[in-house]
Length: 320
Image (cartoon, rainbow, N blue to C red; front, top):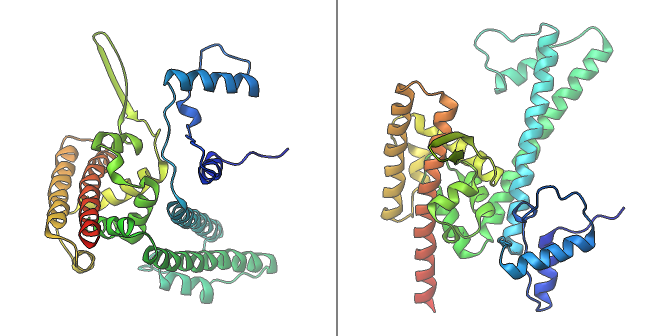
């Protein structure tokens, strides 16, 4: 059975031919309860009626450069997941046979890998082959990630000026290095197409709610938005547990960025660290606290993205 191409491919083909086209996410198409018959003809009629009634919400479609960068950062994300699985396999294999490094050797450091290579041996040939295979997978994953990191650095150099300006500006934030900034820009496109509240909803980090009349119930986060943005932002939020500080690495990333954007990043450090201390003092779970900080961090990302896009637009206008 042949699979149909995704909506983006059809969109690019039709727009190249000069036809107007809109892409709608399947989750945004209204569905009647109790509807159990689904055919191509019924789907086409339903879409036509909903479109005429204005009940379909078109989604943003990235251009070729945006899609290429998105593919690259998602490939790196997949490589990181494979690396974690490979480390788990090797670590559990050694633990299952009672092989532990000496005191003071931290897992997955250079000393740890040197210990595995030179001091861990098995009498059974089958187990020795298993060890070598697991170790090879770990090393292969490391090399794969290194290649993808280099490819991302090269890809950023060839991105459009507006996109590159936002990537550089986002790196003034604590916890947001190049890979995280590229992931955010590749997944969001133009930050100006969102409001702060819409951006938080797009990341799926807003609380779910079920309220009616006098009752008001709020649950966990919806997780209904872009999972890649949510993962990167929550990971970055862990850096704000520590007191505000601009170290050497962060100071180097902030070179060449406007003072206005640096002030937003400094304000984010104070705001999020204070938020972390207050919520932890109230006895909240650390994971939930960091997720709440990630939601607020998206607001600062929006503010910096808006400033960077506006500055680049003004630069292009003056150059013209």
